[in-house]
Length: 286
Image (tube, rainbow, N blue to C red; front, side, top):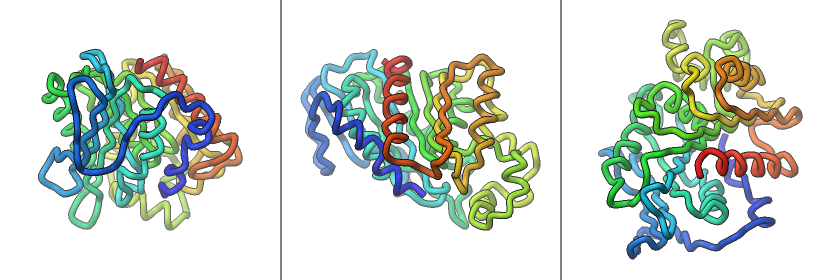
């Protein structure tokens, strides 16, 4: 599901690249105070999937904000490397933002998607907070998630950010409402297999608990949403209903629907996504 996102941002990167940062993916970390610093596969738990990559900008201060990237893959697959294009774009064009690119425990026959993956996000946030002085960063966060990662980013920001640390959240084709009739009455076996991760016979209360749509409030952080009108996995109503809910609540938001796009897009639509997300990040995370 996430191969398309390895390509995202490449168009604009070739047009407006403003700096070059060495982000060589080796496991050797080098750092001097307040210079660019990277450390890969930092463990935040005992499971092999509980690791993240850290990129700290040069000249950072205690006001430096952190963008957390959350990959997709239907909650059962995917890897932080799927978000490398997002990482590279931020490092090259928004050079005062720290980046965390995280893995999380994948759902399988012994591991539930919820609350396991939400708990992993909390563990990463807690880890960063404990290392705040050492890393020289603030506790202000942003999130970018794609597909299942978009769902997780929205849900954590709306329902589990007990310290109100999230300054902005972005979902690219992320599910928002598991009580949507387009889901409950679907006839797509691939889609149903994905939804079954949250329980074939799950109660309405549980489906609402895991739905960002039902967890949003008037204190939810600024939110930017992108959806494809021909997406076979994410009905258009997942985006439009979330947009309408945020509008009703008075939450700052931006919404784009690419009518002819599916579960990802290229060309001018991709360029449009890049421009809008860049501007949203500058407005809310800088």
